Image (cartoon, rainbow, N blue to C red):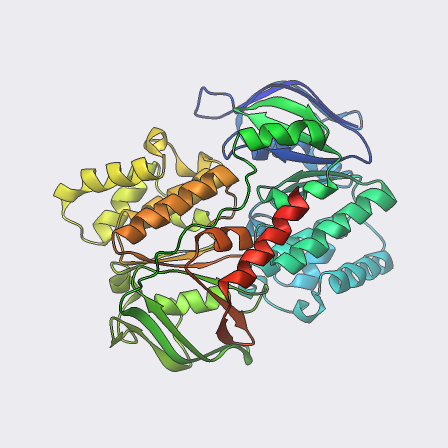
Length: 486
């Protein structure tokens, strides 16, 4: 049993506890979903269960956490790894080897398992997660969803007694996410592995839960069966019914286009004679399976990648000779990992860095920073170290570092990753407000519900090319998910 007794934790450099006097028990064989608004302390609680707090995160601890009687303060996390496995929000944070096969074996090597058993497990879980074709691939070349599958498979291959998962499906397409959640349920049902799952896209996983723990401002406010907790989640706006935002179509001229794009990694074609027109003021969503090339496409739109053949045009001008830095004034790009955008000692300095690089006149700085911090509800974090924020808050902080430049086109790769329903709604409001002021948004996501509620057009990327999906089809996909939630 995992037992948390009057546990509190405060990160170093702050005086505000993130976890406050929590009492919690997780028994063998349970399937627990941990929910709450972004920043309520869910990720911190997860890190506390397997000893990462206090061993790898500085701060002040009070109370006690034990895993099968082992105190996490006196027991090294490495010793707990065979009992309790952890899957993080950002797969990059736990992938340490250069290729997929070695990564899957790494944890088992540390447990000193026999070589034959390791090989059998690697083979089994690679087949299950469709990773065999990536065995020798250099991990940094994988897509975000592919990296997440590698991280999941590597932890599950260790066969721990408890598995704690913090947003494990955030970068997985719907089919892969469903397969993974079904597999977790099977592990739980047939082998008695306890599952502690943090998920913001609750429509995916409520049907599996036997117990829901609802957190608010570092405290456990509700803990019980779904039938008793779900009504409170509805009241809090964490779960809501589907509502389609009126389109008010009226897209203007083409602002960004691609013609005949070809691109490949290691001779494997990713984009194949791809054409695309993006019109002023539309909210264009691109969906597709993991590894289909969605992120690769976005990186062509702002010049991070250059096509092998074909061209990209901004306002009718080929960008082949333009630098990525010069394009940044017109095209704001936010990738999947917010940590790549956060390196200054305060959020205010992050924003100033963008403004300085874009050569924005200093007399505009205060107005722009006040505007973006207000729009994204980040004013209280203006002087805080950005990497101390929660995952959802870091997503918004990284977005602020892009929006403060007021680009004409906003390109977002998995923007709802790590956001609860409340903050997704805020993001949608921001996108709609920017649209009203003439901005165009292009986003890649696996979140069909967000797409169905807020996109004005949806394209599917398959076999290197784009096809338009009828909005009715996307809405039906979203409604199926909501029915599962109910």
